[in-house]
Length: 397
Image 1 (cartoon, rainbow, N blue to C red):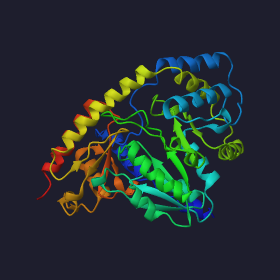
Image 2 (tube, rainbow, N blue to C red; image 1 turned 180 degrees about the vertical axis):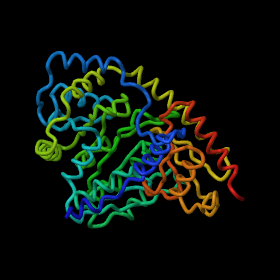
Image 3 (cartoon, rainbow, N blue to C red; image 1 turned 120 degrees about the vertical axis):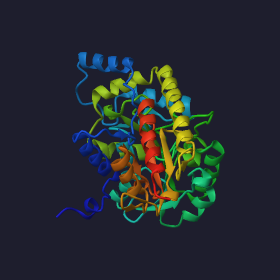
Image 4 (cartoon, rainbow, N blue to C red; image 1 turned 45 degrees about the vertical axis):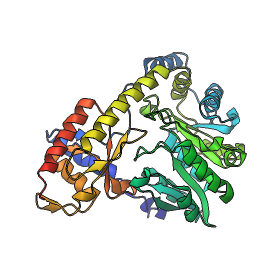
């Protein structure tokens, strides 16, 4: 008999939609996939060259479980220069992707029965990480009117004696929301008084548009610094999703605990990826600027198209590479003998009748929305949105 924690993992709606789309593709049906959670750009050549050089030099052995020292030193410099955070190499742990870093942070901080505040919409993995540690997710719905962002008042109401931590994600997957420095400061004031931990997922920090500015909550004072785990990685910024390389910075006691857990589970992150990551941090500004500019154009084009369609709408996201399509006006409408009851049924109809695959918002705690990624080619974006618009115009009024 499997354990309760394994049995209670929520099945992935993303995988369900992907499986259905793949089945259609195998049958020769053309499908445009809007589910991508990774940039559609190759890893920059200078990073690939560094990986090849590491192979040629025989850097294929175990490394310290927390990562090679030169990489942790480079990450420390990045934290200081980009985020105003002073971490020593001993406070940094390099992991197998930011997802593992998030999981290890949860393992180090969350006990059975602890509550963890998670603003919704949320990345679908957050509640599962909390549950795997025996904790209880406490979801706080954040309205589209407020940009899908948690307010200080909402946070204060959500905290009680059982609250152990807040998971904060800015820029956000799935909503593309970016907290302004003033909004982060307002949350910080509540958190300072509450004395709970913060797990700050900053993986999309370089993908902010329209002049917005990223703010790391741990930089706002010693009390917050001592209770924050700052998580980041290479997958989005450098288009290195398959390299599986992430990292965290934390107070020394937490970093030591995370390193200890990692040493007895996966051990070190891939050695060649570590040398590739070290090279990534030595340059790449031109690549990042180009990536951001490309996504910015797609972001504006997708939002404009959606807002001209019948029944649906969206906010123009400020960061990451996702748009949340509001489908509330579709609920109750019928198509092909089926009544739309929420995002999942709408997403299934988009796939079946428009050949467009996107992720229903139930996966993110947002049942009235569907997430569309614009990390696909502009041509595919236009082709897929043409199909959805045609489908929507045929909906019974």
